[in-house]
View 1: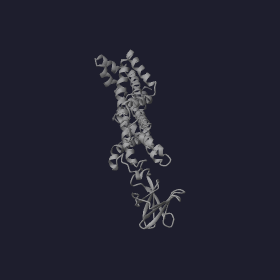
View 2 (view 1 turned 90 degrees about the horizontal axis):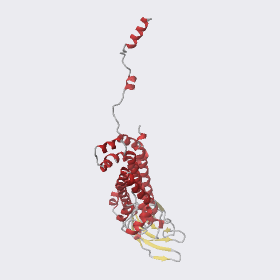
View 3 (view 1 turned 90 degrees about the vertical axis):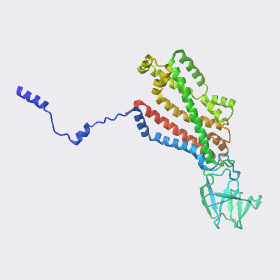
View 4 (view 1 turned 180 degrees about the vertical axis):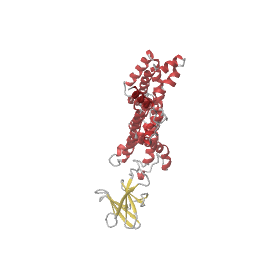
Length: 393
């Protein structure tokens, strides 16, 4: 019996020198590459397809707003009254001799080419107002523009022109407004103004809100009570009311609306930062900094705020759509930037008067506002998920 147990112990201690198979080798292989927090944040952000798409949309809007007005070759305030309310897509009618015509909604007749470029305006040689007919002549041929029952352009035999096709407006890609200004240039320039207001207000929100909330949360006590009661009193009234009152006092203008929005947009950021600082200031690394004699303001800047950067970034990103909407609303009601300088709110205000005859004039700025706000919201949601350490895998 003792011999059997000794044999079992010997066999158990005997090493097996049989080479491992390929599958066993791969199963035992581990990687020694460590992934930092910010590398993991970037990886998870790039896995969010909606957030990545939003990044490219935002970059496209930024580049188009900055460089687009330089490439259109037109000024945002240049007027051409003869081509006012000209839609992005126009109908070109071709006569039997190959002459192309464009019939303007204001009952004007223009010569055009087959690509969609509108040229010289034809003047009527006579007008039969009783029959509601304008008579035109071109290349020794008579044409009739009837507007008794709709608008009809007829040849000398009182027959509609044989060829019609709808193509893009080559003079103004997105049409013109009610006084003949290029909608594309005004839309791009308006994006520049709206985004400038949004980003400047967001930077002011970060600077004021982060410092105010950090000081309030770090010192606590009566200082925190006084500072937060002041914030709560200011937040009891909607921020739009403050902005309207300030704009009435300061007057219209881009700098005035920047000041008015910056003075009222930091309240939510201050509350957020204060809560983050309260949860972090009793941590060991903060106590160690205090023991070492580090100044309170240095502790806030170098220890507390960097550890709160995630919620701060998310809140700042999500505040940009709110700033865009506020600026658009203020410009829409006539308390924003001063015309003729365009912004998306001013374009919406100008387009609402022609919503039936020229709906594109209000649709274009409305779509621009909506797409930009959706992009920043989706990006903010993606950042919130990527920066959450509880979701780290």
